[in-house]
Image 1 (cartoon, helix red, strand yellow):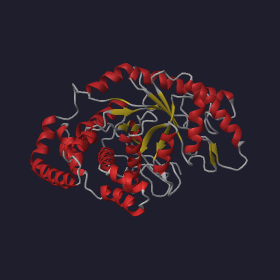
Image 2: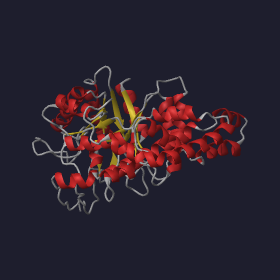
Image 3: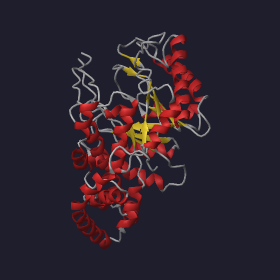
Image 4: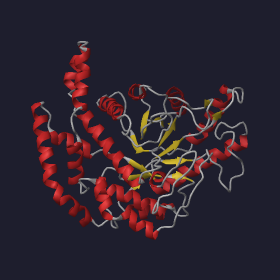
Length: 432
């Protein structure tokens, strides 16, 4: 999408790139020669790397918080238009984030058609819309304190379903093609609710939402191991998500958030299984160390990110099922500049993707068939050990982006400028 009103002067990016171009071409050439000796054409990898598309989360452009405090950042966005400006900056610099995922009612505006036009003028469109039934809003009639789609009260469930229907209507006006449904429903004490009845109620509500999904849309079912329900969560794992998606129908798919798993879970195997069942719908990219599921993508376990993309490449070549996953970054930025973290994550995701593209598939298949365990492993490790950053940077540069997006962002003075023109978001005490 060509922007008619881009947030940054393209000349700023050109001036940033000029002194870095020779070094990039040198690094790219060295990698090209190395790959050529392996029989790999670097330009083919670059073309696929350039085709990667990630959605940015509107909520990720602002500062998140911890249970104890939220530390406001001068110049962070305070409304949808300011969020779109920041997302457009990210896209202009990295060139792989052409769409934004909105969250309602946080991002609800009176005229979604006008919001779509304003986004297109900035060079961005809209990805999946997200419903929010894990917070009470000032104007709602019933509380979600004890659940939403699985609540014991039919009136609360109806309210939650109606909100999802509204999200679909807003998404249609914005040009979106998917609805992501995540609920924090569950229990904090044994015996609090019937575990089987709560799932039955959730399914009944989900079916009412699914009935409104347009024919060319998808409905993403997102699971989460725990939080805010710490004893049991209604949709807590990929098996429950898969069962729900199969129960609903063809348009229902499973969404995998990389942070929503128990420690050491084999996420790449989950990717393979969901594709095998034809229910792999999409990803929320982030990272996790202990219990936080919103750390910057690739910041803790970049090898796992590579292995996930390795399975995605395998799935892309498997013709049993359609392969069209939606990719989105889903992070909370507490002590970093959100734009810089999103640019860093886009880079990490792109690098993991490019490394997976460089795996010698023919050799790997032969080693696997002959049960050569060590060489199978080393074939993956050889690709992971390659420095794919020149490929990602060259693809970005050729698309008009910045060779070093974070350095370019700092050179623009964007945050300093917005700190002077945007309202302060103020302090927050957290939730403890």
